[in-house]
Length: 503
Image 1 (tube, rainbow, N blue to C red):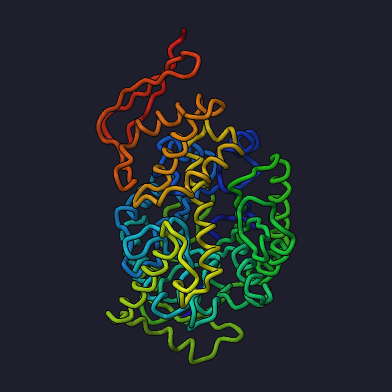
Image 2: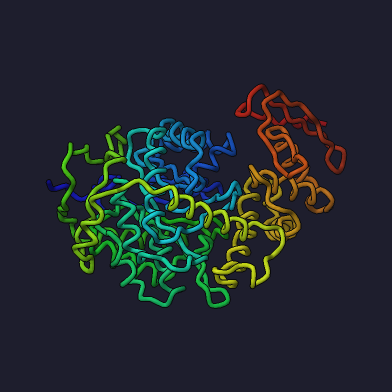
């Protein structure tokens, strides 16, 4: 049986979007035609009722794609179904045309890593993703789930598959199409000394439904996909090579920090749009498929019809592409359940990685084997930076002192072990508490801390915090004598009102 290639999640050639961030809101709302769709980080909506209300509001202007970063689809121990249900509820609330998550794990052995960690390129890892996708699908609405490739800062010794073949396994076993992060492909190629065009060509490009691009920077000989720098020319070149083979696809620009004047981002958006529109019309690709009923093919227009996606539990044959041996394609016809030994081995490896990356004390080089000590040190540094990046958006007033807040945040995070849950909130409370002692930062820090305390209880002895279910009312006196009140009703999602009486 022949199956058509995946269609674009949005109608029209050259659709381009951007990650919606508070720093971009005013410019985007003043020129809504600058983009065709936007993406929101799902976890930001979970953590902030204001962010969720904002996402619901902008869904009246653009199609909104929820993008998950903490579902941990690669965890051998499974996913948090409550998190999956919350993601599903958000998709329904936003009438989302598509939802995306990463082929990565963010927790292992009961430890939260706090950042997307790439998987070993093995059959068992692909099977783990397939099991978790099938579980997540039960909580998600009937829309396409796109899986994003991850950037690698920590390499697993003894990978059994090449990077592209691993993702071919993933799409075959899950029935999901790819959200191809071209920036991540470029980073992995540069950091392993291979040709980016050759690496991206090993991916199952015929199963790509959307593309991400982002900027990065080279530090100490390693290319970091930072999302805080302009998109480099080689990434745009790689984008052009991809769409020349896939045809037009929706392209999304990710920018999460160090925001330039909007004109600079608009120029990057225009470049991406031109590349997308220059792509040849995408031919209908055919690929063999296992016997069984044909699932409805997702065809999503800007009006966001509610259409069925592919059946997640049904394995598909890998698409034929240059360099894929016949024996490899045949092997994908069967998706056997993992043996307890295989699943246990993957879980053990992931627990070991989580321990290495989150231990409060830097492990000595001899203790990280079989992993590379430099890779572990680099990954730990990235996680420290990521904790600050996650915490500062929860302190919007303090973050107006961008450089001072970032320096203070780095010191607080370095001196504090990672909280076992709601790490960003726990770190934000620590940063705010430290900022209260700084006369320059105190007024903003006091208000931010008050708002966080209205919504969360803690930190406890182990550093954890939890949502506040009971009502809250409290006042704080600011330097100079001004008083502010925070009031919240019953429930963790109740709105928090900030009252500043006139003097």
